[in-house]
Image 1: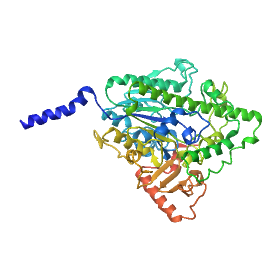
Image 2: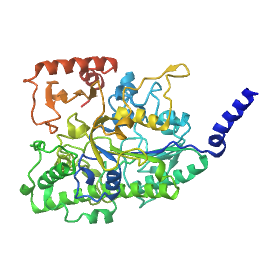
Image 3: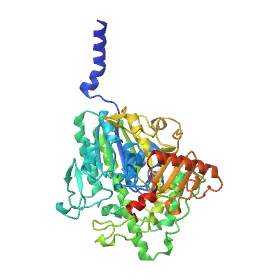
Image 4: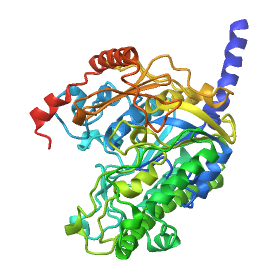
Length: 530
């Protein structure tokens, strides 16, 4: 008789969740933007930009001073989607196959995606937009756990379609089938509409959802609706030199960059604004207006997603995370795509790239650019919003990394990360859940092991306050910085602290061996990189 009562009680305990779909775990919206610099949004010092929706998320949530990515598109996405260091996930270089498991250019099966784990945990899984971690059909999002998918496969795309369906400029895939972007339609808007449509469709699933919203903005080509570009007319007449300094001061005032620390030394390759001719200044103002317009429209899209969540009565139980895949694009590539330009920069027929001049401002007050292991390459904005748990209007030092996202989401979702799938042993997760930090008075991740980077021979190690950097072009000569005192990386302390350099180099070597990192000279020789 006691056994019968026990079984009845157990059934009554689990029945509501099974029969009526009462699942109180949070919905998850993970927003990744492309080539956004550290101060390219208002909460991080970009007060020249109109990003009210990101500003609201920041004021209602928690932001980090220090959050790290992998400095470039595909390796960042590999780590974000799997919780692994990029080499361990198979994308140690880029989305190209270099003939070695750590450099195969697509996500391996030993690394489970967020979608695969969360789907197994009872979540609906959705992606809208850029993929860039597997070009072949069996590597697409729908084959890696996403039940609803809208995306382009590669690393960059026009924002407008200028050809017909048979020769699409913007090759899109929706649920494994080709999708044609109507002429005149702006891709950021389509990404948003597809996500909103999937969210409304998901209502019938009666379970929480995971949405990976991967905007390609503000990645080149520089294209924006003209009404957004015109919003910023005259805003950039003062040029990049004065704006770089203003953003540095703003970042200090907002608390996202430490008071008392200096701005990174100016890039000597960037010409002084006041040395440009009148026509050059007009041209470069226009380019930055377009870039700002791209960010503006992306911010509006986030507002539309939040409005939809409210309409669906899911806003109060949704965790939102926002970050960038790397710092702003550097390089002196002024008009490298001139042959492809048939219209003024910003319009559908243009194809221009952001350069070091404005990108140094975008990454201000940090040093360097995308594809480099200095703070300007690997430091990103990071905003977390979830009123049920995440502290409001709080700035933490943070010290987070991409590898921490997966354990954080699994923690919130109550998801079990597998040790095996069939006969395949699954890579363990090297990161930490940020959930305890986000809901406590603690200021930074309690991490007892270093963080590591390697990309095209450029290396870095961050352990406590110390950061070791070495660049391939300089023969990997070590540079040492005290990030707690000099996040701008102006003062190389390697000669003063040789023992620390030696220790960090030894730690890097051990990590590289564990993650199958190959000497870049070997890759460069075998694959004839330029």
